[in-house]
Length: 345
Image 1 (cartoon, rainbow, N blue to C red):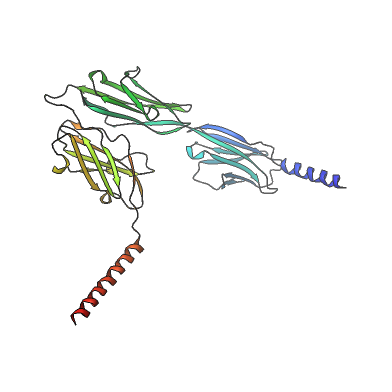
Image 2: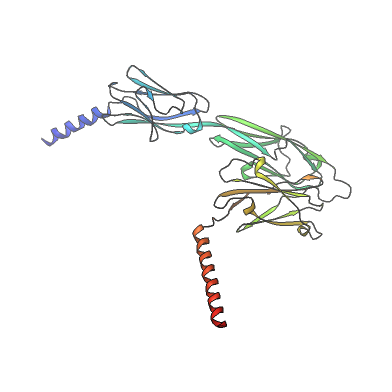
């Protein structure tokens, strides 16, 4: 008797799981292409539900997510869901499910995205002088899946041996600029989905008569509570600083995110070090996380930015704490007044 019951249960389970004939799996799609998902069922009269992760995309022949770029149709007993233009946001688990019985199959979609690169400094042409120290050029890879590889070349050839590569090859550092460093530098980012490249042309001139160091070097940044302090090395007089800040989740610094900071006489004591301190609460909102960068300018032009952006967060000022402090201050004032009156009278 028990064997018969188990046999019947097995047949019921088998018939239930067989309601969807299609098997799920992993699908690879390139950004910008279309992708079609097919779900064949035994009984097309049963409601068919398509989900992206937990969100319902379509039911039968009706699209519920009208902003997702989907199309839905029935081809006999097969429900066909089409993503008209694949975007990175389509990297997700898509499931085809039946309302009754509750069975489903899952398609794991992985979207391949071609790289997008930007070179910093983004001037296109960088004017340097012989003897300039620590010239930093960075290839920012904004997009790309799978993770792109980055290759730097100079004039379609290998980089000079005296140029260092940092941050997985994305950044190049010229410790001291020489004449042979002049030329076009090309950054290529490439993955299976495609490639992107950017170029910067470095012009190298002889130093001015009497010049020892050239443009300002990259600043050294430090942060304490709300104060940002930096030190820049330059023999030629610093004329201006530029402070740039962006939210932690932003891709890059925008022109409106940069502010000019005036130089003070106290910044320099006659040597090659220029040190300045500002209160960041003038520029940033409390409670948000930011990336901060800075560069300095002298008569020869702008120097390099700091080698690494500084991660800062101004602690949020709690209103209740401020209110409590205000109440304590008022009570203290009243007590002082009462004691004074008591002593006088």
